[in-house]
Image (cartoon, rainbow, N blue to C red; front, side):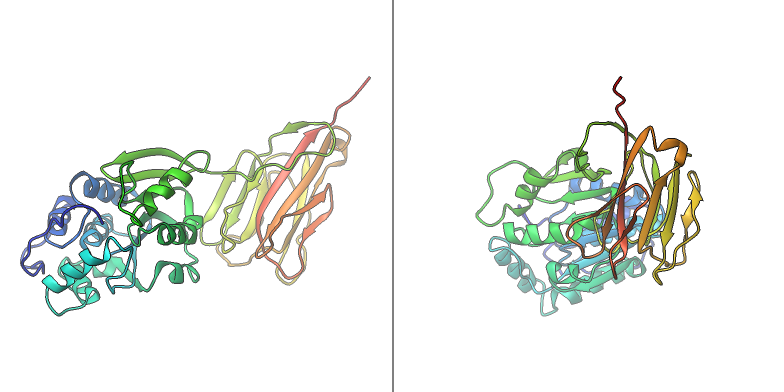
Length: 370
């Protein structure tokens, strides 16, 4: 939180007497509810929320009385799909600067709890079907989180420790191309223990992990970049060759990379199929029952889509007519394993009892000396 509360001091319960029409109506309604996201900041967040395609997942950490939730969920209602996941303990806790302000608002608006105020505002706005509440501390909810995120809004505990815990708990689930928004993160002087989002923006939100960074009001916006795993150096000379690869990931779908790397970050996104765009490869995949698929030629998808059948291994080899020209290495990332498994041309890339959640194919052209 920052700055004065821009809300009326009467009990802020929106009336449902007239239907809402358009995003501007939800923004106006938001201003009748105690909160700190107003003006250009609210406009920008609402526009991003409405721009997301499909069944978008928005995570709002720090919801309080529901002021921002109303226009975020209103944006998805207008779009016809998606959900706003609100994560908040609803007990007025937070960083030492914010807590007295929370307490003052809770006392000023009567005997209802913050959660009861939140529920009333969301219901009165007619957006309950587009909201899912996860009541609890962000770092606790994060231990059970398994859903890829399209828009991540950090606006909860703004102490350095609290902001870091929220960022580390949810940012791995932000999809490549997804948007992160950090409230109160603009460069300025901050009260002690209230600069957590600013520190995250300064230390984490920059290339290569994030692109298109910009500031609107006090909110830092950025888009998560597709960030391939750093290559492990070859132990001999050779000219690296780019490998184009597609993998199908659980709960996410098809992911494409032009550098041969599919490494989404969260262990929960298991690989369910692969396709390598080159006719010099042959490959097969291993299922959860430890059986193997048949060998397939390059440019062929091997695996499944939409059947929740994770892979537990892969073997990639060069065709015989390519072995003299190229050298091949495969790196597999497995759920719960600290380091990737490295194998050479034609070797099985597996780890007992583990599911495959990332892959990198490294190809190098052999040097030929006369």
